[in-house]
Image (cartoon, rainbow, N blue to C red; front, side, top):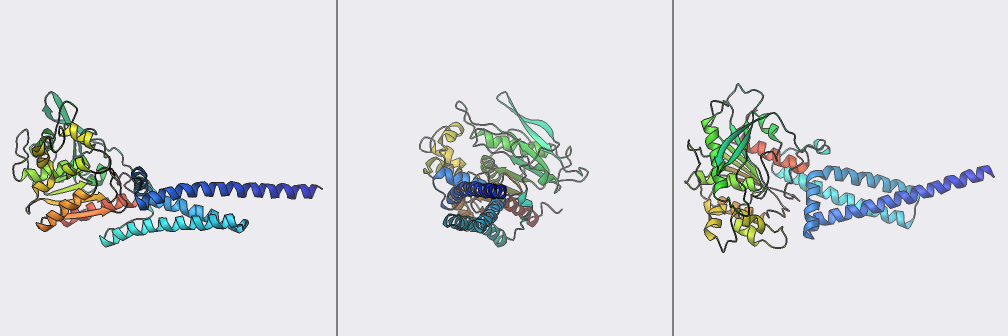
Length: 400
């Protein structure tokens, strides 16, 4: 009787493990199905947004998770050949193959733009880290002091090209500490000046003062070139989201006197501009459909109201109205699935600049959501940083 009881116990344990494995597989498969449904349909809006953000940050890790599920489904199917385990195996295989499509599209983007990607690097996570810096006030306006952080290359004995970096936050939030990836620049011999600027509030709209503050940061850089051993004959402006819109407004406006600094000396027109998912069409942002987040509250705090109420303000902020042939070299990088700053505005601007034969480079990240580059080691993050490296080497701003 004892051997029979042992066999029965093992059989029961095996069945229990099979049931547990099936429950795990079915549950995880449903989660994966929802994720991939949102990724490929971009509907409904919030599901598409979160799915795009997860794929942007963790596409290779998601691939690895599906691979593990596939192995588990295969082993389960071999151990217990039933109709249910067969369906589960087919379902998990389908999910795995669809995730392969996601990776194939991202690698296709890299290949078509001659951008190298590292699969093994994408298995790790890098949301940046603070590095040693110096904090300095550069502007006092209406009783408020505005600061910038200076990040210098390890070899500060060599003259370096300055990078003025401007943070995002919808023009009403955020700070200079938001993007902790300064080492990417300093490792390439550049000096970064990450700046704060006036943010819009319910009582004070800063659509006119914010770009002037950024221009004042450029004046500060020029005035302190000797202190930081800078080569100010060349200058890079870089920003993401609202910061991307500001660096384009300032960089394009300086050349024709549309933007002025609060202080001397007169800032230099930048050599190049890098704008990541920039809001280049403020009028379009106000009028955007339910397929994107409602940004009207931000616009009210930053600009004061609608395009109907303030047409001249919107006209001065819409970057397409600054389009001309003799612009600084510009790289715009957007996410194809951006639900905060839809890519339609960038498409319209890029077509206009290309028609004018302005020096514009454009890259659109497949499945990319707003903040697709948060994890710099992800495939989407690598596409951004590799595109920046390629762009800056082509124009001679980095040589290392």
